[in-house]
Length: 289
Image 1 (tube, rainbow, N blue to C red):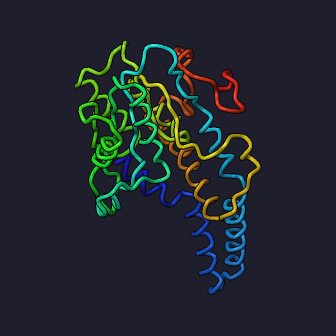
Image 2 (cartoon, rainbow, N blue to C red):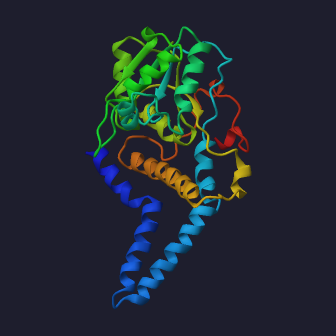
Image 3 (cartoon, rainbow, N blue to C red):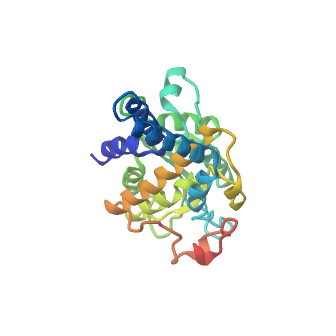
């Protein structure tokens, strides 16, 4: 129920949709007796479109998310037991129809997962991702990920595939059951979590809530750092997209906290394991994490 409700609510609440609805509603009112209000709505919508689409607002919103977790310190022993890759890196609707890999802008999740797997040849590679489509159904992301990872040189017997999760919380819960069933969990086990940097706070919160101890390995950075706080966008569509992505994560963090899917509103590093984290991202001190 949460999955479908979240999809429906977010479709209406995402900033780009709200701006479009504001302009559209205003345009309709212009042709009625409420023409003055219609012009106001259109004007406000147009101003918001320019601000959201061209200003650095999207960078300002996504930067705290990307900077929240530094990468784990892999120079400290022991080596990773396994590498967890979250779905969201491939368009399975297109990929299954074209019978070809179709990586999206989050493709670094699979690429860096394969790179780490080659760096640590004894580590297992766990992937979690089902079919999150509602109107258009496809096969699971796990099927596509398995094909890509094996073609990148990862032996099939190293892969642990979870093919039912539709959101981040289900990733954590379902994957924990899968790993526990295979005897891959325990105090001596060290698992890395790979997902987009802006998504890492919500992912870490969900995995902690599920009782699965993981260390962050953020990828798919969208900003260079604080330098992008003053960098405007040269395409309105790109600025809108950046604000939508960031807003979705902030709303998701709030929703997960309110529904008990995470214990913290804005999860940060685990003070119990400070030695396992590398250097903080640019512009942050360890105390701010």
